[in-house]
Image (cartoon, rainbow, N blue to C red):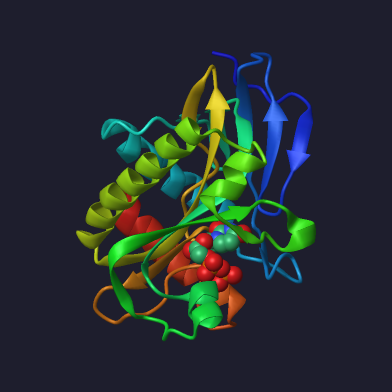
Length: 236
Ligand code: UDP
């Protein structure tokens, strides 16, 4: 299997994507750079890339074992992950089990309010527009995904939620909310991107302390420590 980095084809806020000699595979490189509020706030979280690579590996492996197809192939080293090439669907899928962040602000609902049924939302991936909230009809009308693809995405996202919630609960972590990205690979929808404290809200079950990027976003301190603790609980 070819695992050498080729040309860098994309640099995002937290990751770089490289070509490999195999046109069906990319290398996803995890950086320590941290951004918030659409990159208006920037910083570094020491060794974040290493921890997010490990946490994502563990969670993608778990999801694959439960029948959720993902782009994950294998972790190559501390900061590099081999993934299948995806034609990314420009929609961020957010699932919420507890109200927090933007939904708490938008609807005036207190952060920490639990909901009986998970809430699934779609956001259009467009930095210039601050990723606006959109609905199913918009996604279909603008041909970002077909109705059938959207049905698949919805059921995969809910399965990811059930699987991660129960896995994390056993490790003393409440899965508050998270963001997923999906793409097409040979006509199949695969889960892409990463699953880590940058893209999820994790609260400690006992103390309700935040163990995710909100520590950076809100200047709560002990950012590295929180990522390390999530890494320990998820990977051990
Ligand atoms: N999220 C993300 N990338 C984004 C926006 C949100 O990974 O561009 C994650 C975020 O970490 C949280 C969930 O999606 O776990 C819901 O985020 P929310 O809409 O509350 O926005 P935020 O408060 O993070 O701006």
